[in-house]
Image (cartoon, rainbow, N blue to C red; front, side, top):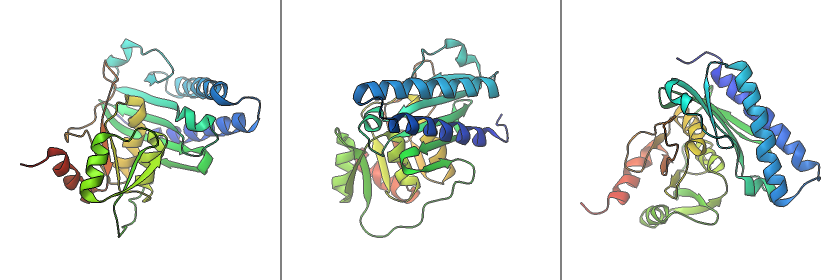
Length: 246
């Protein structure tokens, strides 16, 4: 069951964690890997403290915490990535994010993705579809390791590649109409995609595994290696390329 204010809670927690991270980075006290490690730790501590206070009976799965097997018996599980794109954050870039999402019965339902360095947060409540874009298809891909499947689809669709950092930043580029397709196959975990998927679904986008199956959360093994978020009118074109010749 979803509470009326779950989305509002996700948004407030993500935004406030973003403020904390921006303050830490702006202090100039840390840099490089030390800054990234401190950012992960402080954001995680804040998010978990707030969620445990606000939703004491819910389970929590965080990238920065050992997974508690007891969460599997709980229909409601918050799945969070306190700092998605630690490297980008520590390098002073803007393409990093904070993910706060609620999974109910294995499905991403409510959530928010904060992009603090871009002064923007997108939440499942009030999320609107991106505007119609003409011209060449745009695909967001990893800055350093574009997935082979993404490159294959881009070549087949003559898509423009847009290198970007964190998974949340890439997914929100599609939600915001700055890109049309985000395809990932290089390995992720539930915290990498739960909040972006919840927001993308709320915006009316297509979300699935690369074989078209649904994304399921709060599993015993949180590894969830592939993901497709795209405009609904592009989904079948992507699947056709992935399937190859009939």
